[in-house]
Image (cartoon, rainbow, N blue to C red; front, top):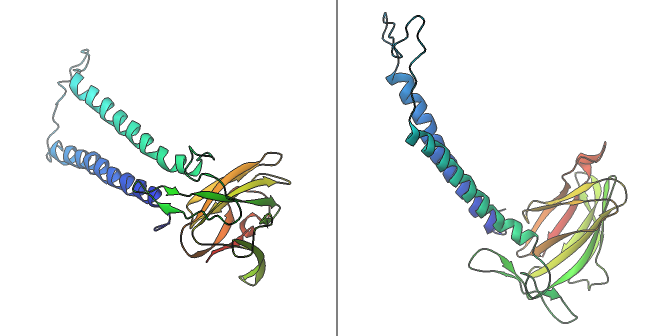
Length: 236
């Protein structure tokens, strides 16, 4: 996803950093106590001062308990907060308040680009349709010119698969539905995924920021040939 999804890459780096930091503290604490408090050979220490008929000594440290509860809570809230960034980008609304403006008119161009925060912004967008069925994807460019959007078939591992060709620098809003069961569009190079639900229209932003070619997958189990429900998407 590097290069076309800086928001996801930044969050991956943040999660990786915090995982290493928390893991170092947790496992460091574990190994320290495992060796520091290990009994020497031949000794049976009675650290808790256990006596027959006497309730064991209690070790209560309010500061430690509050710290152990409060710090992870703050970390979880922070990670949740930064995780809103890609969700906001993927589910951006249409119109002036969104990241991609309103639908393009003839002669216009999306002219998409990354802003300083890593969001893809566009002057306008083009609308296309995606229909899922067992076990096939169908694309419709809705009458857009060939240079903006075209459909065909490509040979993938010896089989013909639907091919969708998009134009670099343009942003597309896919209107999606299913004619049978629930499917899910997964575009690895775009770093996005969205369910396709029967009887309900769902939407997915597809910003074609740079040249690429990848397999669009189905990420929701939909029957025997789920693993082979693929299509080729090319941005050029």
